[in-house]
Image 1: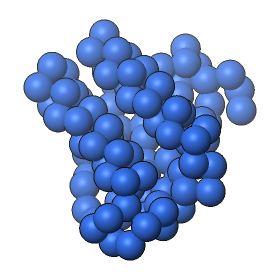
Image 2: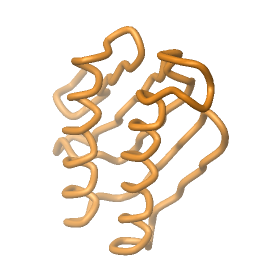
Image 3: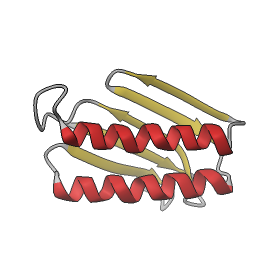
Image 4: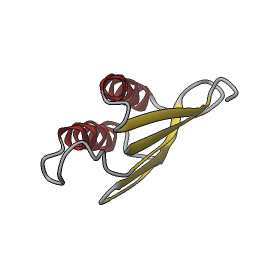
Length: 107
């Protein structure tokens, strides 16, 4: 299972995100759930790097992605869009992707 953890600040902005694991939907190299999650998250990181690179820290390794940064108009839009996509996949594949949010609303 891929586990995504989204950390929000008191205003509800994403200030951290981590994803780890493999979906286990199909064999390595054929797993469309893992490929979709990876494509969404890696594209989000590329967008942040292109449109809001300062004050952002990221790590990308096999089976692990971490991001920390300060909210900007670009990061709000990029993470908002990425989380819509991840949420859709998680609803369709709840045994393969879990997205949890921490903070923002006091959670």
